[in-house]
Image (cartoon, protein in one colour):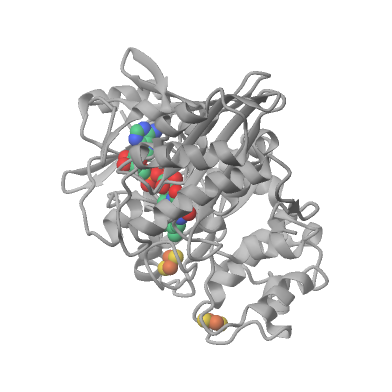
Length: 493
Ligand SMILES: Cc1cc2nc3c(=O)[nH]c(=O)nc-3n(C[C@H](O)[C@H](O)[C@H](O)COP(=O)(O)OP(=O)(O)OC[C@H]3O[C@@H](n4cnc5c(N)ncnc54)[C@H](O)[C@@H]3O)c2cc1C
Ligand code: FES
Ligand code: FES
């Protein structure tokens, strides 16, 4: 008999809820049901960070806890099952005094309009708990998912530095209670399928791959929800009813990250934040690309599996994965298959996914020694913006001749797509400017980009041409790209 009650901890208080609407958001619950109105609604689409709250979960090894910011506005309430949620109302000290993060914000005049302030405070709180030696870049990264429209970032960034002197994280009451929190989370853990719903609208949350396969066999049209950073917006912005839905976040088998000498395998439930360090260790540019996907809250929720499965032509990870030579593992009851990632994208909105089938994992080969790999995201803003075009390149030279090249782009066709005609022209040729200029004609065969509000077709084609030139320059000592020590940002001499 599946469980039908969700159980979680809210600011220290244990909560049990029955008859939960599958797509009620955490933000609606907090503001409307609990009157915890410190958490604000700005955009209801994961962009502004006004709704930022902190989720506490058991770590992957089960021996520790992890705190992560999430956007309450696009997070469905049933996903809280088995976790703790901390909102701005829960930060105060036991004596009612301000938390060091709040004190630092006050002392640095970090609050101006006040509307965005609780979101900033929660992002800073997670940062304070997770990172004791902040650099300017890490502070920027932690705050990029929180928008301050009155240009007040400087005092907020100053507060991010000052909060440590207002009280050390190790003496913070949340640190002191960690063992107790872990026990309370363990007590809620179970391996039953959760099934919640009202008025015939159901949401399932299986705890195993076998359970997921069974549910999808019986409900092949059910909407799979991984991080919900795409699906959440279908509900809040397009007012779509996605029930029946299946959450995959409780399935530990889908959260695996395996690393061998030959390959990295990433389960479909692994978030960007969890995958980024292992990917960056082998593909530094790909790590940098992930750092530019959404804000920290989105990277804490969104998965690479969801980015692939959604099939968007402007999804950022697919070009990088295709260029790297990734394969996709798919499964449905009793059947497993794998295919080259580029073959998964059939047409706009159409992926090679059969009824009841789901993405189980993606595997990237580790790059051979001497392989050049780069990816470039071109968007109007550096942080938290969707790409106009995104290009990725993998190259192996034999002497100065192209032994192997893989090129893939997003934003240039109806799907993320490999540039097979361009690759064919380059293969076996000397890696020279002349060869590149000659090969650029073939890009017209590979891609027919669209004009939309992000960029014109002409601009996209010019960008794709120039990125190939840039890749050539960066791999031929024609340009001197400088990586700022320990920072990962690219600058140019
Ligand atoms: C503020 C904001 C900023 C964003 N910025 C970027 C960005 O910079 N670059 C970018 O590429 N994207 C961006 N996105 C989009 C989104 O975050 C990504 O596409 C993300 O990877 C989706 O993953 P998810 O786990 O949240 O997927 P979900 O929303 O849970 O699902 C997405 C789709 O995949 C399907 N699905 C999920 N998992 C599986 C599975 N295992 N098997 C089969 N189907 C599955 C779902 O049914 C749905 O159709 C942004 C989104 C937001 C809200
Ligand atoms: S309300 Fe803007 S991110 Fe949630
Ligand atoms: S302080 Fe709220 S928008 Fe700047």
